[in-house]
Length: 484
Image 1: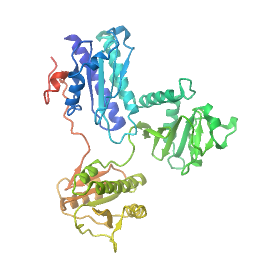
Image 2 (image 1 turned 120 degrees about the vertical axis):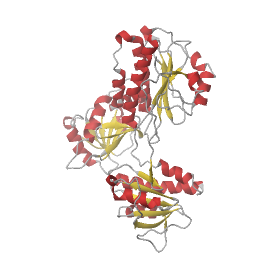
Image 3 (image 1 turned 45 degrees about the vertical axis):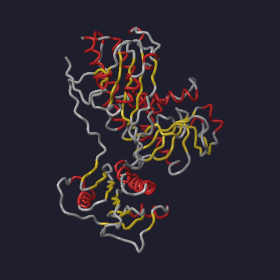
Image 4 (image 1 turned 30 degrees about the horizontal axis):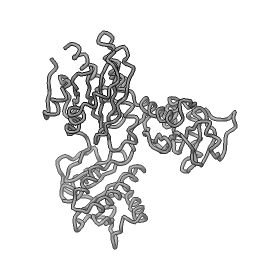
């Protein structure tokens, strides 16, 4: 019983740190684990926020109706060899990221977290879960007498390490172990440059990192003399050099230590790219996004406007699916442009057969937003005070529209006129959803006088929750068992 209490303590502190760290990296995130300490032992589950609810049938088939997870083991139970860890790959469950492993101290463990729809890549998150596997194996092997309790804090601050671990794995696959690029200095430099304004402007343009042995394949526009090649550590100098490549297809080329020159050519083989977009940027491998960076830290977000509720609203409406999909693309394009340019806008999506009357600037004939030229014009109209009025016919019916209505409970004076006008207007009109893109607030989606939220409705975590037998968990809807 005492040993079970210690294992639970290890898991609880590990999962708390993992959850906090992933929430900073990807937005609000839940975590859970399924594990068995010894060969032949029962599988247990610790899921304090009900992350795995809804996946009971699949988990039952994987772990209870089949013995494959147990037969795959090749590691003996010997705590002295806890570092001999064999990984277990992502289970590919819908909406989840998972990673597990086996070691001599913990026979089997599989960790889970949420797969957010706006993630650049799941690679860093998988490395994060892999580290949780290793930390739990280490803590259980040390036993209570040597337990330090640092695993939770370690995982809480693991973002940069997770990105580094993923980059190293990908680099080793492409280049082998014999590489000269050291990832930590590269990541430090990328963040330092991102925080360095030049004459009040934030950096834009691309900085790429390439192995020296690949340089003969690169066609340089210009190369700097050997004795004048800027050091990567000099972030202010690199920030000035980015002025030469911003708003172009030119790139600064670095070997991981110094800036070699400028190129426009495609990069052969493996390369790491820091793509600066002002206050945020993207870290990429061979053109594929790994994560973004902003405010001096790495994030998983794509920085694209999140319109999940709009997509659901359109797909559940009476519109045919192809028209609903096209309308969603139009609205996303306009909203993303407003968010990127920081001017904000309001978009009224009107699905009534006859669009409602809204006071504003109209046209002799509404124009079709499926035409790219008209779509670009609509994006320009979005900068004008007032709302864009888009109908179910995929046409723009007006701009600079004034949304009025009577006072309703739930208004928030701190959110500004756009937000509160949308609340009032949607409260008085059916079949309408309004998207409010503020210059300094997250995107708001409003319908029937209420802001729709993408946040998970979490149940509170009680301190007396303990791991449950998986067999019991899959058959009972919700169990809260106090620790004895």
